[in-house]
Image (cartoon, one colour):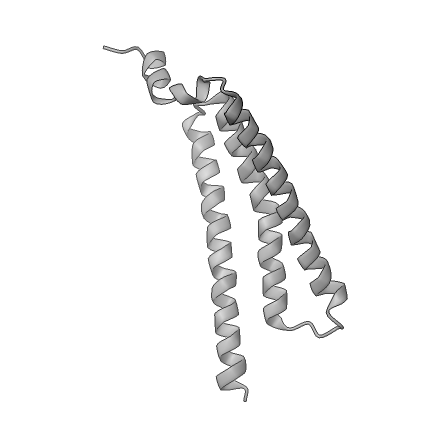
Amino acid sequence: MLYHNESIFKTFGGFYERDPSKFALIVISFVINLICFLLFYGIIWFERFGSDSKRMLTNKLVSMICWNGIVGVPIIYLSDTLMFFSAPLSKETCFFIGLFRFVMKSNLMMFLNAIVISKFAFIFCFF
């Protein structure tokens, strides 16, 4: 019979290995997330100030998708990094991380559906 710590080590043994390639991947993912953050902010800025004051509903919804990414991506990245360095986490922490991911995915799907519905309404109902 395995003790609790031994079963955790067997399950999460790969997390405890100090491999340089894992740290390189963490640094690369941090840089990519930073670039995505800047690109999201650029999209939001252009929609707000650079699109010659013709702010359509679909552009505003795309901006909301970008805000969802600005809030969600860093928090999810930090939670994944936290799990990488201090795995395993408690059940409550994993539950809240999973709940946050579900909320971010639901928001994304809601905004994408709103874009499709608004385009349908603009094309077939208002003209």
